[in-house]
Image (tube, rainbow, N blue to C red; front, side, top):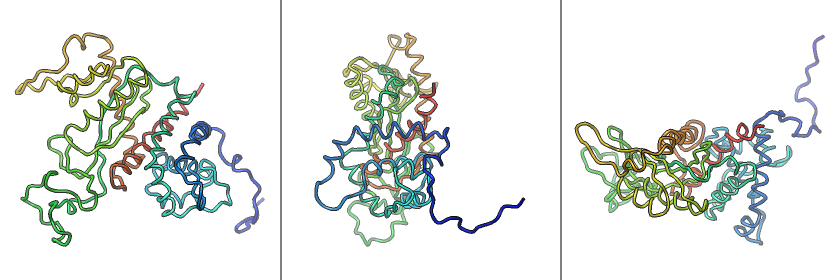
Length: 359
Protein backbone atom coordinates (compact mmCIF):
# COMPACT_ATOMS: atom_id res chain seq x y z
CA UNK A 1 0.00 0.00 0.00
CA UNK A 2 1.04 3.63 -0.43
CA UNK A 3 2.81 5.18 2.54
CA UNK A 4 1.55 8.38 4.07
CA UNK A 5 3.45 11.64 3.46
CA UNK A 6 4.15 13.77 6.51
CA UNK A 7 5.99 17.02 5.75
CA UNK A 8 9.05 17.66 8.00
CA UNK A 9 8.49 14.47 9.98
CA UNK A 10 8.76 14.40 13.76
CA UNK A 11 10.17 17.34 15.69
CA UNK A 12 12.49 15.33 17.96
CA UNK A 13 14.92 12.57 17.03
CA UNK A 14 16.59 10.11 19.39
CA UNK A 15 18.80 8.29 16.88
CA UNK A 16 22.47 8.01 17.83
CA UNK A 17 24.77 9.51 15.12
CA UNK A 18 26.86 6.33 15.40
CA UNK A 19 23.92 4.43 13.94
CA UNK A 20 23.79 6.74 10.91
CA UNK A 21 27.40 6.13 9.78
CA UNK A 22 27.90 2.96 7.69
CA UNK A 23 30.02 0.32 9.38
CA UNK A 24 32.36 0.11 6.37
CA UNK A 25 32.83 3.84 5.97
CA UNK A 26 36.57 4.71 5.65
CA UNK A 27 36.36 7.41 8.33
CA UNK A 28 35.49 4.77 10.93
CA UNK A 29 39.10 3.52 10.82
CA UNK A 30 40.57 7.01 10.65
CA UNK A 31 38.60 8.64 13.47
CA UNK A 32 39.97 6.54 16.39
CA UNK A 33 43.55 7.16 15.25
CA UNK A 34 42.94 10.90 14.97
CA UNK A 35 41.35 10.96 18.43
CA UNK A 36 44.33 9.19 20.03
CA UNK A 37 46.85 11.50 18.37
CA UNK A 38 44.89 14.57 19.48
CA UNK A 39 44.79 13.23 23.04
CA UNK A 40 48.58 12.86 23.02
CA UNK A 41 48.91 16.58 22.13
CA UNK A 42 46.98 17.74 25.20
CA UNK A 43 50.04 19.38 26.82
CA UNK A 44 50.92 21.19 23.59
CA UNK A 45 47.37 22.52 23.34
CA UNK A 46 47.50 23.75 26.94
CA UNK A 47 50.73 25.63 26.23
CA UNK A 48 49.22 27.39 23.20
CA UNK A 49 46.14 28.73 25.00
CA UNK A 50 45.69 31.16 27.86
CA UNK A 51 43.99 30.07 31.07
CA UNK A 52 41.90 33.25 31.17
CA UNK A 53 39.24 34.73 28.93
CA UNK A 54 36.39 33.21 26.98
CA UNK A 55 36.61 29.58 25.82
CA UNK A 56 37.67 29.23 22.20
CA UNK A 57 36.93 26.52 19.67
CA UNK A 58 38.47 23.31 21.07
CA UNK A 59 41.70 22.63 19.15
CA UNK A 60 40.70 18.97 18.80
CA UNK A 61 37.58 20.00 16.89
CA UNK A 62 39.48 22.66 14.99
CA UNK A 63 42.07 20.23 13.65
CA UNK A 64 39.48 17.56 12.88
CA UNK A 65 37.42 20.06 10.89
CA UNK A 66 40.49 21.22 8.94
CA UNK A 67 41.19 17.63 7.90
CA UNK A 68 37.78 17.43 6.24
CA UNK A 69 38.75 20.08 3.68
CA UNK A 70 41.31 18.02 1.71
CA UNK A 71 39.49 14.73 2.35
CA UNK A 72 36.29 16.00 0.73
CA UNK A 73 37.59 18.83 -1.47
CA UNK A 74 35.85 21.63 0.44
CA UNK A 75 36.87 24.88 -1.22
CA UNK A 76 36.77 27.30 1.71
CA UNK A 77 36.24 27.52 5.44
CA UNK A 78 32.92 29.25 4.87
CA UNK A 79 31.73 26.25 2.87
CA UNK A 80 33.09 23.98 5.61
CA UNK A 81 30.90 25.74 8.18
CA UNK A 82 27.93 25.31 5.87
CA UNK A 83 28.61 21.59 5.53
CA UNK A 84 29.05 21.17 9.27
CA UNK A 85 25.63 22.72 9.78
CA UNK A 86 23.74 19.90 8.09
CA UNK A 87 26.18 17.07 7.30
CA UNK A 88 25.83 14.46 10.03
CA UNK A 89 28.96 12.60 8.92
CA UNK A 90 31.09 15.72 9.33
CA UNK A 91 29.56 16.45 12.74
CA UNK A 92 30.30 12.90 13.86
CA UNK A 93 33.94 13.12 12.73
CA UNK A 94 34.54 16.52 14.35
CA UNK A 95 32.71 15.66 17.56
CA UNK A 96 29.72 17.98 17.31
CA UNK A 97 26.36 16.79 18.61
CA UNK A 98 23.39 17.13 16.21
CA UNK A 99 22.06 20.07 18.28
CA UNK A 100 25.38 21.91 18.76
CA UNK A 101 25.66 25.28 17.00
CA UNK A 102 28.24 25.70 14.24
CA UNK A 103 30.96 28.31 14.49
CA UNK A 104 31.13 31.50 12.45
CA UNK A 105 33.63 31.31 9.56
CA UNK A 106 35.52 34.42 10.73
CA UNK A 107 35.85 33.01 14.25
CA UNK A 108 37.02 29.68 12.85
CA UNK A 109 39.74 31.39 10.79
CA UNK A 110 40.90 33.42 13.78
CA UNK A 111 41.25 30.29 15.90
CA UNK A 112 43.10 28.51 13.08
CA UNK A 113 45.88 31.11 13.27
CA UNK A 114 46.82 29.80 16.72
CA UNK A 115 47.51 26.36 15.26
CA UNK A 116 49.81 27.97 12.70
CA UNK A 117 51.80 30.19 15.05
CA UNK A 118 52.42 27.37 17.56
CA UNK A 119 53.23 24.80 14.84
CA UNK A 120 50.56 22.46 16.16
CA UNK A 121 49.72 21.08 12.72
CA UNK A 122 53.28 19.80 12.28
CA UNK A 123 53.17 18.31 15.78
CA UNK A 124 49.96 16.52 14.86
CA UNK A 125 51.64 15.13 11.73
CA UNK A 126 54.58 13.87 13.81
CA UNK A 127 52.27 12.29 16.37
CA UNK A 128 50.29 10.60 13.61
CA UNK A 129 53.42 9.01 12.14
CA UNK A 130 54.47 7.77 15.60
CA UNK A 131 51.13 6.09 16.24
CA UNK A 132 51.43 2.40 17.02
CA UNK A 133 49.28 1.44 14.02
CA UNK A 134 51.14 3.66 11.55
CA UNK A 135 54.81 3.52 12.53
CA UNK A 136 55.16 -0.15 11.44
CA UNK A 137 54.04 0.89 7.95
CA UNK A 138 56.94 3.33 7.52
CA UNK A 139 60.45 2.74 6.25
CA UNK A 140 63.20 4.17 8.47
CA UNK A 141 66.00 3.96 5.88
CA UNK A 142 64.76 4.84 2.39
CA UNK A 143 63.11 8.13 1.42
CA UNK A 144 62.32 10.29 -1.61
CA UNK A 145 61.94 14.03 -2.01
CA UNK A 146 60.48 16.41 -4.58
CA UNK A 147 58.89 19.83 -4.92
CA UNK A 148 55.80 21.25 -6.56
CA UNK A 149 54.45 24.69 -7.36
CA UNK A 150 51.64 26.12 -5.23
CA UNK A 151 50.03 29.02 -7.06
CA UNK A 152 49.66 32.10 -4.85
CA UNK A 153 46.46 34.06 -4.25
CA UNK A 154 47.84 37.07 -6.12
CA UNK A 155 47.54 38.35 -9.68
CA UNK A 156 50.20 39.62 -12.08
CA UNK A 157 48.78 43.12 -11.69
CA UNK A 158 49.86 43.13 -8.06
CA UNK A 159 53.50 42.43 -9.05
CA UNK A 160 54.91 45.94 -9.12
CA UNK A 161 58.26 47.67 -8.48
CA UNK A 162 59.16 47.70 -4.80
CA UNK A 163 59.60 51.47 -4.80
CA UNK A 164 56.30 52.15 -6.61
CA UNK A 165 53.66 54.21 -4.87
CA UNK A 166 50.42 52.57 -3.78
CA UNK A 167 48.35 54.73 -6.15
CA UNK A 168 50.69 54.34 -9.13
CA UNK A 169 48.11 52.99 -11.59
CA UNK A 170 46.56 49.54 -11.59
CA UNK A 171 49.74 47.71 -12.66
CA UNK A 172 48.14 46.32 -15.79
CA UNK A 173 50.58 47.88 -18.28
CA UNK A 174 53.62 45.61 -17.83
CA UNK A 175 54.12 44.27 -21.37
CA UNK A 176 57.66 44.67 -22.69
CA UNK A 177 58.98 45.66 -19.26
CA UNK A 178 61.43 43.40 -17.38
CA UNK A 179 60.08 42.14 -14.09
CA UNK A 180 62.29 40.37 -11.56
CA UNK A 181 61.92 39.29 -7.97
CA UNK A 182 64.88 41.48 -7.05
CA UNK A 183 63.13 44.67 -8.10
CA UNK A 184 59.44 43.73 -7.97
CA UNK A 185 57.09 42.21 -5.41
CA UNK A 186 53.41 41.44 -5.07
CA UNK A 187 51.56 44.14 -3.17
CA UNK A 188 48.91 41.66 -1.99
CA UNK A 189 51.23 38.75 -1.08
CA UNK A 190 54.87 39.84 -0.58
CA UNK A 191 56.00 36.24 0.09
CA UNK A 192 54.95 35.08 -3.39
CA UNK A 193 57.65 34.92 -6.06
CA UNK A 194 57.48 35.02 -9.86
CA UNK A 195 58.74 31.59 -10.93
CA UNK A 196 58.49 28.88 -13.56
CA UNK A 197 59.50 25.29 -12.96
CA UNK A 198 60.53 24.35 -16.52
CA UNK A 199 61.37 25.94 -19.82
CA UNK A 200 58.43 26.79 -22.04
CA UNK A 201 56.10 27.33 -19.09
CA UNK A 202 54.70 30.67 -18.07
CA UNK A 203 56.01 32.36 -14.94
CA UNK A 204 53.49 32.60 -12.10
CA UNK A 205 53.34 34.08 -8.65
CA UNK A 206 53.70 31.02 -6.48
CA UNK A 207 55.34 29.17 -3.63
CA UNK A 208 57.35 25.95 -3.67
CA UNK A 209 55.97 23.03 -1.69
CA UNK A 210 58.38 20.27 -0.63
CA UNK A 211 57.50 16.79 0.56
CA UNK A 212 59.51 13.85 1.90
CA UNK A 213 58.01 10.36 1.60
CA UNK A 214 59.17 6.99 2.83
CA UNK A 215 59.67 4.40 0.11
CA UNK A 216 57.69 1.49 1.59
CA UNK A 217 54.13 2.76 1.14
CA UNK A 218 54.74 6.32 -0.08
CA UNK A 219 53.39 8.07 3.02
CA UNK A 220 54.44 11.67 3.56
CA UNK A 221 56.72 12.04 6.59
CA UNK A 222 57.69 15.71 6.26
CA UNK A 223 56.78 18.81 4.28
CA UNK A 224 57.45 22.53 4.03
CA UNK A 225 56.74 25.67 2.01
CA UNK A 226 59.47 28.05 0.84
CA UNK A 227 59.88 30.99 -1.49
CA UNK A 228 60.07 29.91 -5.12
CA UNK A 229 63.77 30.13 -6.02
CA UNK A 230 66.14 28.07 -8.12
CA UNK A 231 67.87 26.50 -5.10
CA UNK A 232 64.89 26.14 -2.75
CA UNK A 233 64.18 22.50 -3.65
CA UNK A 234 67.71 21.33 -2.85
CA UNK A 235 67.96 23.40 0.32
CA UNK A 236 64.63 22.04 1.61
CA UNK A 237 65.67 18.49 0.71
CA UNK A 238 68.91 18.83 2.70
CA UNK A 239 67.07 20.16 5.76
CA UNK A 240 64.35 17.47 5.72
CA UNK A 241 66.83 14.65 5.02
CA UNK A 242 69.13 15.72 7.86
CA UNK A 243 66.20 15.90 10.26
CA UNK A 244 64.99 12.46 9.19
CA UNK A 245 68.46 10.94 9.56
CA UNK A 246 68.69 12.27 13.12
CA UNK A 247 65.31 10.76 13.94
CA UNK A 248 66.18 7.35 12.50
CA UNK A 249 69.67 7.30 14.02
CA UNK A 250 71.15 5.56 11.00
CA UNK A 251 72.32 6.29 7.48
CA UNK A 252 69.44 6.78 5.04
CA UNK A 253 69.04 6.99 1.28
CA UNK A 254 67.31 9.85 -0.53
CA UNK A 255 65.85 9.43 -4.02
CA UNK A 256 65.25 12.49 -6.20
CA UNK A 257 64.98 13.57 -9.84
CA UNK A 258 67.58 15.21 -12.08
CA UNK A 259 67.09 18.69 -10.63
CA UNK A 260 68.87 17.51 -7.49
CA UNK A 261 71.96 16.24 -9.36
CA UNK A 262 74.39 19.02 -8.48
CA UNK A 263 77.85 18.78 -6.95
CA UNK A 264 77.11 20.95 -3.92
CA UNK A 265 73.83 19.21 -3.10
CA UNK A 266 75.29 15.70 -3.32
CA UNK A 267 78.25 16.74 -1.16
CA UNK A 268 75.97 18.32 1.44
CA UNK A 269 73.86 15.15 1.71
CA UNK A 270 76.88 12.88 2.11
CA UNK A 271 78.27 15.17 4.81
CA UNK A 272 75.14 14.67 6.93
CA UNK A 273 75.10 10.88 6.55
CA UNK A 274 72.59 10.66 3.68
CA UNK A 275 73.27 8.55 0.58
CA UNK A 276 72.08 10.54 -2.47
CA UNK A 277 70.13 8.37 -4.92
CA UNK A 278 69.44 11.21 -7.35
CA UNK A 279 68.76 10.59 -11.03
CA UNK A 280 71.82 11.26 -13.18
CA UNK A 281 71.51 14.43 -15.22
CA UNK A 282 73.81 13.76 -18.17
CA UNK A 283 72.25 16.44 -20.34
CA UNK A 284 71.41 15.92 -24.02
CA UNK A 285 73.35 14.93 -27.11
CA UNK A 286 73.97 18.59 -27.96
CA UNK A 287 75.01 19.58 -24.46
CA UNK A 288 76.62 16.89 -22.33
CA UNK A 289 77.34 17.35 -18.63
CA UNK A 290 78.92 15.27 -15.91
CA UNK A 291 76.73 13.84 -13.17
CA UNK A 292 77.61 14.41 -9.52
CA UNK A 293 77.29 10.68 -8.79
CA UNK A 294 79.08 7.82 -10.52
CA UNK A 295 79.19 4.04 -10.64
CA UNK A 296 80.10 3.76 -6.98
CA UNK A 297 76.48 4.70 -6.25
CA UNK A 298 74.60 3.56 -9.35
CA UNK A 299 76.05 0.01 -9.36
CA UNK A 300 74.14 -0.96 -6.24
CA UNK A 301 70.73 -2.59 -6.54
CA UNK A 302 69.29 -0.15 -4.01
CA UNK A 303 69.90 2.76 -6.38
CA UNK A 304 67.64 1.25 -9.02
CA UNK A 305 64.97 0.52 -6.41
CA UNK A 306 65.11 4.12 -5.17
CA UNK A 307 64.68 5.42 -8.70
CA UNK A 308 61.60 3.25 -9.10
CA UNK A 309 60.03 4.11 -5.75
CA UNK A 310 60.76 7.86 -5.86
CA UNK A 311 58.02 8.34 -8.48
CA UNK A 312 55.42 7.66 -5.77
CA UNK A 313 55.95 11.20 -4.53
CA UNK A 314 53.87 12.50 -7.42
CA UNK A 315 50.82 10.80 -5.87
CA UNK A 316 50.41 13.12 -2.84
CA UNK A 317 51.05 16.16 -5.04
CA UNK A 318 48.50 15.06 -7.63
CA UNK A 319 45.93 14.10 -4.99
CA UNK A 320 46.33 17.37 -3.08
CA UNK A 321 45.89 19.42 -6.24
CA UNK A 322 42.99 17.48 -7.70
CA UNK A 323 41.06 16.61 -4.53
CA UNK A 324 42.72 18.88 -1.97
CA UNK A 325 43.21 22.63 -1.79
CA UNK A 326 46.78 23.44 -2.89
CA UNK A 327 46.35 23.88 -6.64
CA UNK A 328 45.75 27.57 -5.91
CA UNK A 329 45.99 28.52 -2.27
CA UNK A 330 43.58 31.02 -0.75
CA UNK A 331 46.02 31.97 2.01
CA UNK A 332 48.88 34.44 2.04
CA UNK A 333 52.36 34.30 3.64
CA UNK A 334 54.64 31.28 3.94
CA UNK A 335 53.34 30.47 7.44
CA UNK A 336 49.71 30.09 6.42
CA UNK A 337 50.40 28.39 3.10
CA UNK A 338 52.67 25.87 4.85
CA UNK A 339 49.92 25.05 7.33
CA UNK A 340 47.51 24.39 4.46
CA UNK A 341 50.14 22.32 2.65
CA UNK A 342 50.74 20.14 5.73
CA UNK A 343 46.99 19.64 6.23
CA UNK A 344 46.79 18.32 2.66
CA UNK A 345 49.75 15.98 3.21
CA UNK A 346 48.14 14.68 6.41
CA UNK A 347 44.88 14.24 4.53
CA UNK A 348 46.66 12.14 1.91
CA UNK A 349 48.10 9.88 4.61
CA UNK A 350 44.69 9.48 6.25
CA UNK A 351 43.12 8.66 2.90
CA UNK A 352 45.62 5.79 2.51
CA UNK A 353 45.28 4.39 6.02
CA UNK A 354 42.01 2.40 5.77
CA UNK A 355 43.52 0.09 3.13
CA UNK A 356 46.99 -0.06 4.66
CA UNK A 357 45.61 -0.99 8.10
CA UNK A 358 43.22 -3.59 6.69
CA UNK A 359 43.93 -7.12 7.99
